[in-house]
Length: 74
Image 1 (tube, rainbow, N blue to C red):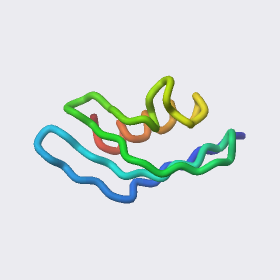
Image 2: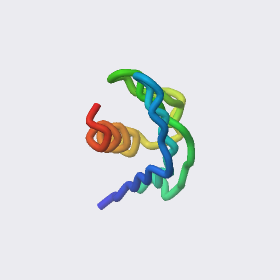
Image 3: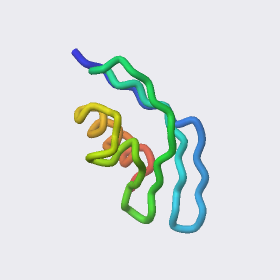
Image 4: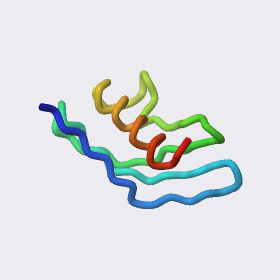
């Protein structure tokens, strides 16, 4: 079974924006990535989770988005 990992290393809330530093291990490719994603209100932005620019496998990208939404309640 493929197991992805996401670690929030830091975050800063600034008004309606939330900037999040993450480390993600893609269980499909066994590669690790580090970067920043951002919530603006309920919308989540960042190259790590972007549908065409993300280096993550589709399943890892979906896992990461779901995990961040659940963790931060957005």
